[in-house]
Image (cartoon, rainbow, N blue to C red; front, side, top):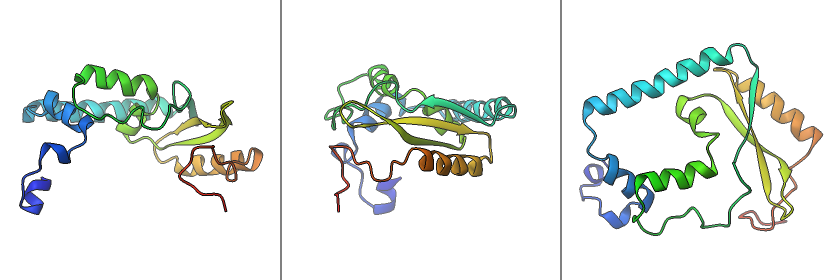
Length: 160
C-alpha cells in the first residue's frame, strides 16, 4: 500500500527484518484465511469482554523477565523462521498481546525496579469501556509509589 501511495515500489531494505519474516511466512494468506483470522481475534475480544464482566481488573506482569539490553530484540536480518521470531518476542512479553489484539483497555505502570535500576511494569487490564478505572488506579498508584522522577540509568529522557 505504501508503494501505491508514493508511486514507487517498496524495497526489502525499507522494511524492518521482523516484518519481512512475517511477510515471508504469512504474506500469501488468502482472503478467506485473513477473514477467518480477523474473526478469531474478534471472537477473542468478545470472550474476554464476557469474562471481565465479573472483574474490575486483571493484573499481570508486563514482561516475563527483566528488561533486556537495548537492541537485543532489534533484529538485524530476516534469517529467523516465523516460529523463532514469535518465540523470541512472546517469551519476553506474552501477557500484553491478547489484550492488545482484542482491544481491551490496559496500562503498564512501573511499580517495581530491578537491582539494576530498570523499571518493572505491572500490567492492568480493565473491562471494555473501563479506561476511567485504569486512569483512576494509575493516579492512586502514582500517589502511593511515585515514579515520575525515577529515571533508569539507560534512558532517552535527559535529567534536568
